[in-house]
Length: 374
Image (cartoon, rainbow, N blue to C red; front, side, top):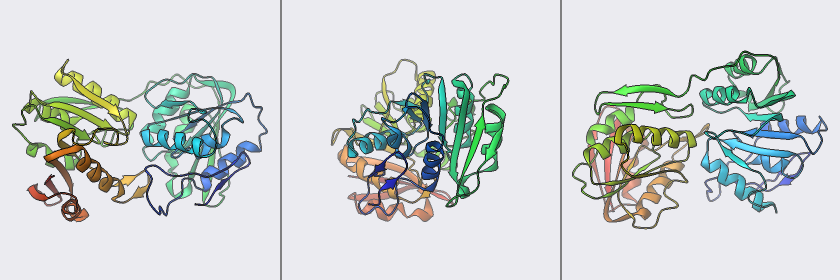
C-alpha cells in the first residue's frame, strides 16, 4: 500500500470499508496539495483547524498533534477510517475529535480545510453553519480534483464566506481559498420537504440526503411491494436514507420492530424526525452505522434495502455486495432480504450466490424488486 507523504507526516492509510487488494487509494493529489499549501503558511501549533469531508482521514491524521484539529463530516465510514488510520499510525483513535455533520462545531477556527463533497447542498449547509464559527483572519480552503470541482463550489464560497482565489492546477487538483468578509447572516434552505400520497407522508430531508427533493424512482418502484403480514418480525431498513421504506412498512405492520441504519448522519437525523412525525412514540432503533456490521448474527427476520452503487465519486457494486453479505449474516434461517435495483446491475445472480432462493417480486422497465431467502 503506497504511503501518504506530506510536510506534516508520512502515513500508512486504508480506505473504509476495507476491501482485499483494493486498487483505490485513501488519499489523492488534492489532499497533498492542500497540506503543502497549509505548511507554507507556517502556522503556530495553537492554530485551530476544522477539516470537513475528509473521506478517509488523510488530512486530519496528518495534522494530528501538529495543529489543534477537529474533523467533521456526514459519513460514519469516514469517521471509522479516521479512527483506524490514527491507530494504524501510532496515535490514539480519538486523537482528533470528530463532529458528525448534524451536530454543532465549537469555533472559532483559524483555518477550515474542505474537501468539496459530491453533494453541493452539503457544502452549502456547511458554509452557512461556518458563518459564526470563523476567526476574523480565518481562511476557508477548499480542495478537489479538477474533474470533481464544479464552478458552483466557488460561487458558494464567495456567497457565504468572502472573496475567493483559485490556485493553479497541480497534479490535476485545485484549491479555492476564501477570505472572511462581511456577509449578511444566511438562513439555511435545509432541510427540504416533500409529500407522498401513498402512504400519506410529509418527509423531511436534511442537506446530504439522497434524492432530497423528491422520492427516487427506485424507492417508488419498491413501495407498493413491501412485505405485509410480518407480525412481530424484526425488520431492518439498511441504508435507510430518510426512512421512507421502514416507515411505510411499519404503517402496514403495526407489531413489527424496526431498525433503521445509514452511514449518513444527516440521513439518520431525517429518518428519526420522519419516524416520529409518522409513528409518534412507537419504538425503533435509528442509528448511524457501518451497515449491519454491529448487529448480532441471526437477529433479523427481514431486511429492506435500496442499495447504493457509488461511494462519493467511485461507482461500483462493492457496497451493495457488502450489504447483501451483511444481510445474510444478520438474517435468521428462513429470513428474507428484499431489494430494489436497476435491471442492468444483475443483482439476481449476485444474490443467488449468497441465498438459497431468489425470486422476482415485481419489475418496471428500469427496476426489479427481488426477494432473497436465507
